[in-house]
Image 1 (cartoon, rainbow, N blue to C red):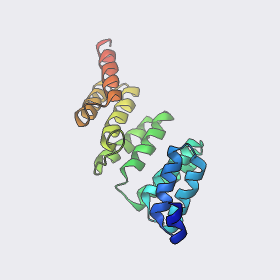
Image 2: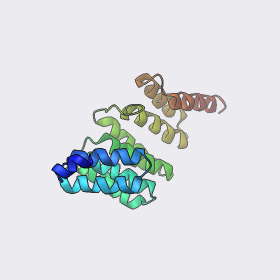
Image 3: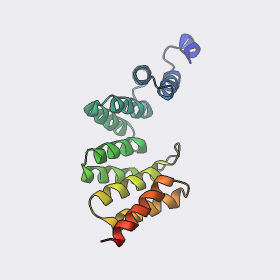
Image 4: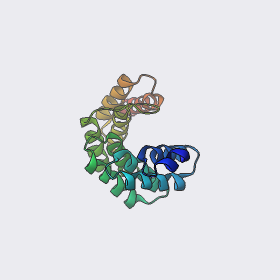
Length: 171
């Protein structure tokens, strides 16, 4: 990537891929710098905003993470991972109504395959978690089942389904 940037210092994909590689190596700060360079080179790169937001989140800069993910959605209303990231953040903060709204928005746009599972698989599982936190066990069970239907090997959804079913029986 460094050689590509020597030839073309505005090569957005090289900055983007270099940022991903640096995140994978644990160098979040340098990865963020490269996502910022990718955005400077191409201000309409919603994926770079999503990954930059993850860096802000990692560094506990929550307001910046929110603003960055919202910018990704402003650029691309189908940025499913930006919706999921916002939903996860709000769920983590106990703001379940906001989390549910963002998970539902994620499910309203086309799915994207990710690692280890698709965006919709994650959104259904997260929505199930938020519903369970609100005491809606039947709704949570439905969401976990849908997550498992999309990816039968997604162990987290299987565990969550099992827990929600046990909680429903004990009510």
